[in-house]
Image 1 (spheres, rainbow, N blue to C red):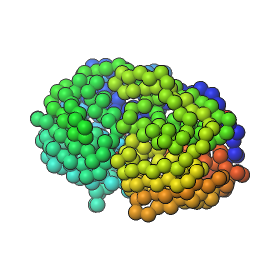
Image 2 (image 1 turned 120 degrees about the horizontal axis):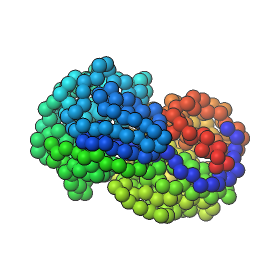
Image 3 (image 1 turned 135 degrees about the vertical axis):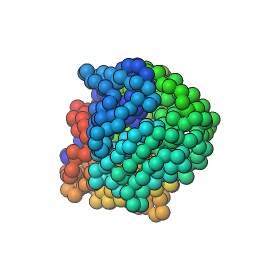
Image 4 (image 1 turned 180 degrees about the horizontal axis):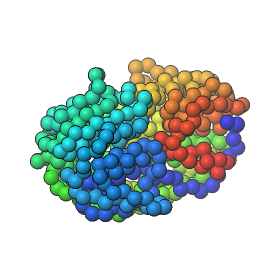
Length: 422
Ligand code: S3P
């Protein structure tokens, strides 16, 4: 990659990955025909679609529109073979919750990236709910689940994870009584919003979520907002490349997810959200321009969940900000598609950044300029790859990143959209 001049233009990005997964899941469990526009066409979401097809749900795609013929909470049928989920952690953890309520045996398998990611975090609460669920030694994929009867629990989350919370809530749909989840810090609430929209009896009181089981869901039709995690890479590019001005339309700006907007404002970046609307997920147009002085910030542990997937690109921004950025409680980054602390510290150090980690605290001292490097690596991780691509555009000299195909996990068109903005 060569250094780039300003970015400019208006774009609409593909649908939000988290919301797309949940739309397929809720539509498959609801009664009636759900029509969704803008389901993200990426590896991860396609694994979720394939999984429901393998369990008898009719899902058809025509252009931008996906039709899901749901037949109710307990209508799935036993798959005739193991369900492969590639590297999609969201598919595996949320499906575990859904399979808890199905009266058949199923096995969820993983590729080499997902096989080393922790599943004990869902095995434990689902076992407490009476589900027969087993992982490989140590609590890793594959997961073998025999569902059918689910007990409600009150579960205090030991970690902040929207995937774990969602697995318990999906399982709670099948429990006789009220399932309650209490979060350590509030994580993305896409599952709560989606289930409520589909008619589930769900109440949220601060960090406590209660769901009354055994209520059928009803089909709905809606459009998925653009993915703010994908947007954040272009936002960073526009902030860092002088003379840039871009507008990203119809992006999901759910506050439990859009922490990047608050952090960028605190850093002094020129970012605005216009044309806000809200069906069951807030949506807006994000306008970003370069200029002003970018300053380092401090980010506390309770703010991390709202920015968890944007931390790699935030490391790039902080590397080029004035002063020090300190991010506390970033340990969950070590169990993403790769250890994102290691991948980002390694790559950015090669470019001359001053970034280090000590006991889950990241400390970044801004430098004036990053230097191009011929040895950057994606580590098979889409977000490391896209963050480093943006870093490379801002650098002095050329860079090379290996193994860039991994962007198809969440954003197959990333490099094409980036070219279009140059
Ligand atoms: C996700 C939750 C987060 C996030 C992931 C998607 C979701 O994971 O990192 O990309 O859709 O619920 P954790 O729940 O493991 O933090």
